[in-house]
Length: 272
Picture 1 (tube, rainbow, N blue to C red):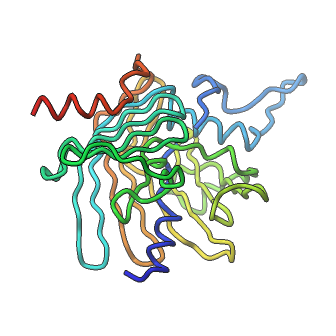
Picture 2: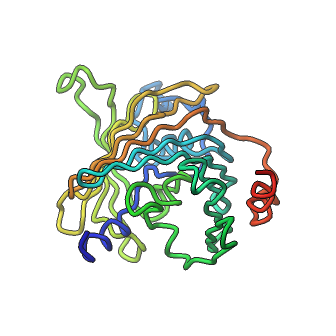
């Protein structure tokens, strides 16, 4: 892989999506339309729709197992991770597979980022590495912890004509344009959102308006009043592909901030 391609892939990471992932300040029961004093419905504002998407995607805390299938050229790598997040400042990723990497992983403490290996111990990484692909391709730590989509962008919305694609549940088409001083590499993002406030498609563009990567969301499940896509397929402009499957996702757990520590990794190592 060329140096230019490596740098671009590190800058792209994965959202993603997620991505991913986000402020949970809007109640799940918020109505799809707002009422005027005359009883007429008015369309939801673009920021309200994005907040609903973000709220469903992140929650106050998260725990789940993530299976990654990363295909670069003709080579495919498989990884299994266990992920915990608390708010937007704390995240812990434990590697379960491959076995050679068992109990290694990443720890985010605000702007600090650490890598832990049972053989080497903790290694502090530069803060900018939070946006780097963890395995040379595929998701970044920011993606796995469901980093926010709203802080660095202005958002606009268009209603989707359902007759154009009867098989799609998409209701809104969001366009996110970064602020001039935003620390992002994207020129804009485009998101198709269903009437259940679930992302269907997320497209990343560069500064020249060319597509960098596309993420497709599927296998939506219900967790309480939350609807959540558990399969994300990402294809980038280099032809590489990542399939991310989220298993047994849990939201709004009572996690203690002290869990997010190097000592937690060390305890796992001692138990093996």
